[in-house]
Image (cartoon, rainbow, N blue to C red):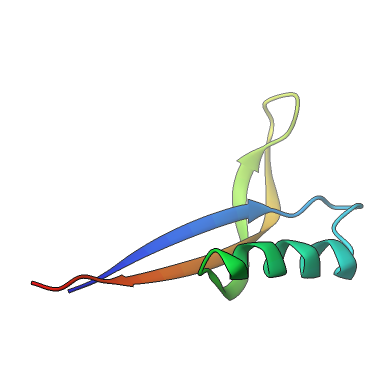
Length: 66
């Protein structure tokens, strides 16, 4: 049976340049995660106001024997 684990990583508007994203993907890739998509999701800013932010969506697959 396959189980899937997902991780959402919030991308900061200014500091998430290509080098930062590459570093994150390399670190998470060594843990078995793979890149799925960049998704825009609703969240809150520092003042509790709703805003949309970009998130990296990563997936990890585990296969268990039955």
